[in-house]
Length: 229
Figure 1 (cartoon, rainbow, N blue to C red):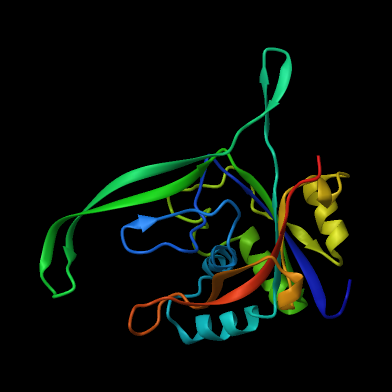
Figure 2: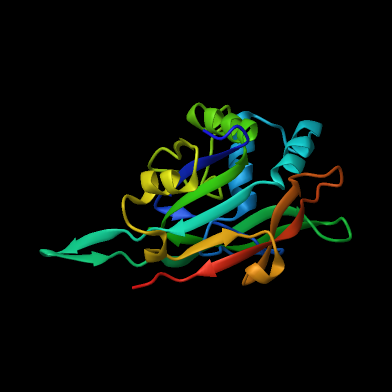
């Protein structure tokens, strides 16, 4: 194993998942691939790091050097004797929240919110970087201090999230995807330079609860590649 870099394999499976990166106010959307903020939030929860703490700030600063690869993994069912790919769907849950505050400080009786979820999705992720940090995340996910969720507390994992720590990315992908090549799957890779990417996502967390109660994020550059059929 490299003395500097390690690769943490993660499996994200569950009937519901939610990966918000552009949610505002009463509409909480979900992207089609896991976000880095959610993955790091999961790791910090497993470590038992309180929101808004100095320890959280220090760890998130170290996490800017980590690189995330996310892979959409098809699921299959049988119609009669024939296998068919299970279609991932977005659903929207309708909420009413009572006793929220308005901008002028008054109490609002009922506030409406809409929250999106992914149904029947499955993902494989590889988080790569500093070996000490990756090892601490892996050990925590095997025996988490706090519960870990697939984006929101309503999204319970149905399989162990921790998939192992590996010396290189190909071995991590082999454990998650078997002998199928990465190109057979739609995947999104975090890149270092702007011209290597296809999009910028505002999901690199700086803090999950600043003293003013506001979460803070900065963009990161990613490259999305569709599956080669």
